[in-house]
Image 1 (cartoon, rainbow over the protein chains, first blue to last red):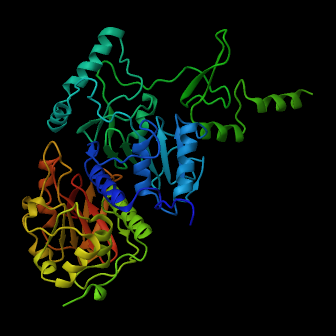
Image 2 (cartoon, rainbow over the protein chains, first blue to last red; image 1 turned 120 degrees about the horizontal axis):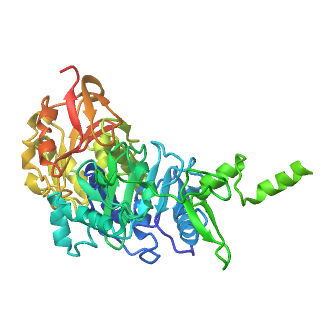
Image 3 (cartoon, each protein chain N blue to C red; image 1 turned 60 degrees about the vertical axis):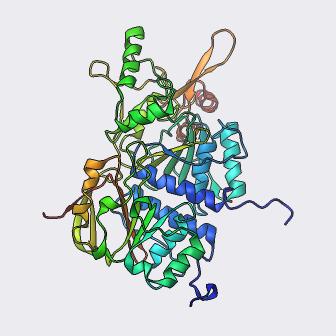
Length: 296
Length: 202
């Protein structure tokens, strides 16, 4: 063989065993960050090395892999990770949320409801929700041990004091199974409710910070808030310009230098699925033809 | 004296067999009470069930101190097999074991003797792998907790009979605690420390 031979799914078996043991403990202690011996991967930190290692440790020949970056199947990060596993593991890949058994994600949860046969793997940059409030690992570890999360509530309260509302829009802290405060990775807070009582297993991998954590299926996940300032998911008040969806998370896209903009679904598979089912938005190309046809 | 050549084989395909065994154990841990099957592709020493042998080959290595109960430890073939295929150091001290393999449930040591982790590092705890008679019929138990949609029912013939009463200390210890993997031949059920088990009808 002339081409360099990699092990199935790139990682060597000893590394996979170590990651697998960490995953089992992470599932047993929902929301707790299990330290693991993160490896150098053939991509830079920040490109999903944690998620890639978790995916590599769980992936099998029968799996169908989907990778999304901010909801999109078609961006550089998503395509390169998808190709990485197609090449090193030979697994089938898909862009369909429904068809996937393993979904690796950067910063979004798909709009379609996940099922019990799926695993959602998150790429996490900073796994410690308290890190920007307390830089010392020894201290944050102690705070988790004592379930001492007052500092996080003070932070959210200061938001209210300064802005009149909780200004945290992404990486919005959650409490898992009424015990650990957890960083849901930089997903928009719009996605937080989808983590609660989810049928799929959710695994989180932080490569640079060397942590793995998990939310088992059907586990309570509560976004932190106050009685008089309850948690509210945020979404631009507009329908998707391509598929007309009123309930999906939207990206704002600047279209010219005169203030023009459009809002489109961040979940490309969801948006394409709706368009294929005949839903139109104000700017979609397909209905233009249909309109032309119906008018003339 | 058993030579290496006479030992039962390990996985025929180390990579894919370990992966499929892990997914069964991961699914069992993520969905407590559900019975997962391990497709057994490895040989196993006489004192060890096929499922337990596959789990050993999948998760054990030189980084995981291993404790064996008396019945397992007295089988020279089993100890040799584990040493040859996994390299896991066998320890006498339960409190430093990453894994404990137990074939004789009636002689299960008090659970407090195993590693329970610390409040700072609750993951540094022993995972108990307990061989039981059956996981398809027997006494009924109701399970609640993360990973379970409402209530799960487990039927099994499990020794020691008071296992789940003993395991109740997990509730007060959390986040410290013991995670349990039950094996009956090729069937696996996991009871992580978050699961609350009650006898049905009691």
